[in-house]
Image (cartoon, rainbow, N blue to C red; front, side, top):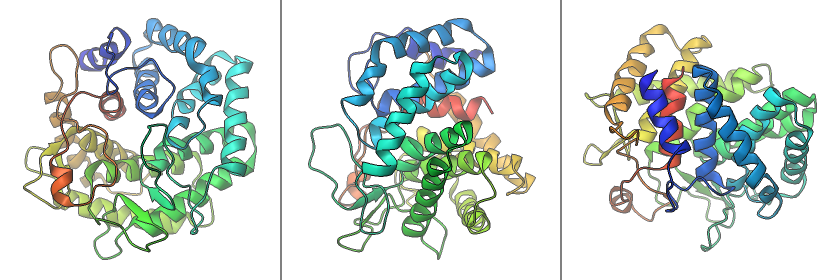
Length: 335
């Protein structure tokens, strides 16, 4: 419990202004961190965590309307959780408004997947789907669909889940590529990026936990079993996973480790994986705890990473504390 509080309070009481740890904006980086804080609140019952989240919503909630992208949807996962606690109608209204935009207007690739759109001023990722999208959008839509009874949200989330698995998985070994380029019909650099695999397995298990009776559920469970088998093979002796899973010369990456082990633990709890996989979780959990510094920063996390042009470029991504590193660590620790 102490390590959970250290990680959460590093975000709540920090005054960071750099992109990687600045929680004062409505975007994906704060979004993952906020979801970690919400999860820590449910675990610790620390009222100041809930107070912080409500105050954050008061300041930044309306920004959801000014930058509608896939990535910047991420904070709504926490806003929806806050609505379940507080029943504040403005929380639900924003969630529904942005969800309606996603299912009717968000750009799709020629394969029907959500195009990975971002708020950063970078060249667009036309006709590309990325593993990240399942976390940034689809968990939220699945939860909103269940809460409201509006099946259009749930159906859209499940459709995206199936598309992402089919386009990003390598059927030979069960590992996942970072992205798919619909125009070029390839996986670009075709790297098994660690955090992409974390986004996949964690998000899939969240969505299945909400809804396990959709048409392709058995197929998705088969993907997870194959994925977990390969992940178990590539877990390092210290419990971590590499920033490139199948490249032992790549550095160990803690956010990938946290997301992967959280997904595996959830798959065991949902009887998709057998209990032998708890060893993967326990080894990884020890590594995550060891990466937490005295001030509560989660070390060993790679900074923002688009689909890079080569494996070498992934290995050169800089390491620094990030809100998504903090958030994913909390998701793993609070299971």
